Image (cartoon, rainbow, N blue to C red; front, top):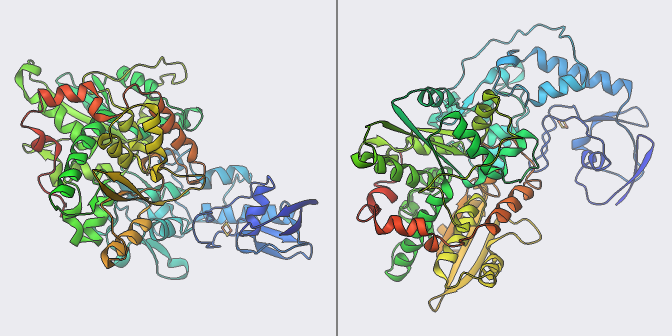
Length: 569
Ligand code: FES
């Protein structure tokens, strides 16, 4: 507690963890590259340097606030200092900005503009190193790395994976997987959080839009798409809409114009997932099956279990993810000649908030009858780029509804986009009643965040005379904590839901970038608002789902909705 003078203005502070936070709270957006409020302080970039009344320069992110401090943030000396840092970073950076994936979204680029950098006086003596294309989800370009360490810390601290590290010393320092292995051969779970936190183009998404455009232009191909629940509340961010605003109708309309013949809503297959997963849960509880049941819809989490807790492999639900179910069902539908009289090939494209879905689509258990179910996975960011390339006026385009029969989902399917959504949908399925009072009671059972954000939530619900113990968590570091406790016998649950990204898919590695988890509340609330607008709240009351089970799905449930085997080798 105390008062600090910043640029001549008195500013009160309470429990801010460093001087930088106080300066930002005072409305001064000091430039930074390596500071992330949710990660440990690294103090590498020195851009946050300020000056005190004795002329001392120091990094504000690493300075503890003291009552009576007098700070200057914008002197000539500081401006020169920042400009020089940016110039040195640019000099050591591969300067292919115009063709870089992060062009327009690069923090280094925007700071260069902000600091008025117009020339680079120094030569780049760094040797170019090869790019790492080994991952199905992300591309590493070490030539664009500025050694801020954000990716190293997010992978270790938030995700508990530690696939990236610093190697070598001095001017040879690089970020890479241990022993300079290719990232695709490590325990990387493909969550893409490193790409979200990377301020430059050193880590980017593997792009799949070129083959998708080719398919869209091929008259012998039927291109069918699905859009995941979390996409609707983040897509608009790239077009100046309020973050959290539900723009699914506009995305559907834009995709129809691009030539996607059918555009479905993954909330439909999320309903199928809950039908199957709730049945599997009840079956395991009643017949002494493996418990806790671990949810299976997040592919990064599934890989994390296989890599770190293989003894729990049989606890993972055998249900395919909503992406997998939708693609398997649609492909099967068109395998039937009467639904495909002209014999055209069907290409399934999914639009996902998640980079790990690209890996899931290629897992050996994502094939049916030898055919890959989902041909191409595009992240939200890639679909944004596709829409931009068409020149469609996203602001003006009239919303369109997803197509039928696989485009109608319940509210339970919509809330898959947030952490706790799968569990909440399972509870909706299992308890009787569908009125507002019942829905509110479920929402308040502990499955959702309260006033404070909680990335691990434990609660109990009564079901059939027993107390069902549930744990919902997001962020793989939190998942590791829970699994260690379950393994040691310290904790016991019937059901564990994990989403690899904190707050769930709304903060997925393929969404328009948002690193501040506090700000993601608006996306979460957007999902809950979208649920409120749905007519049907429960998967088992979705008429499209019921008619599918009654007809087309009969005797094909296992083939299309479950995984023939679980872990990709
Ligand atoms: Fe303080 Fe980088 S933000 S050193």
